[in-house]
Image (cartoon, rainbow, N blue to C red):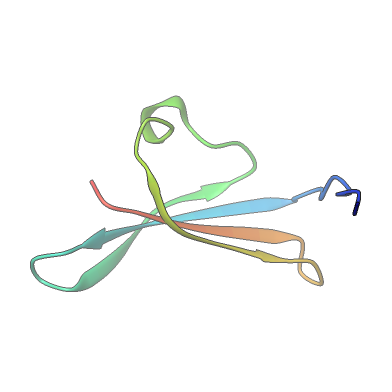
Length: 60
């Protein structure tokens, strides 16, 4: 069994992906995810350990 270590993130970046127009727009960049974006399902998530950033793509 592998143990997962907690990954400390210094910056979170959230993008909105518009499925109809196939475009992405930046929604948020900061340290904590705003409560308004939490209920939306994550389409994609990337963690960069070197830069200590987490990129999340959602669809509003």
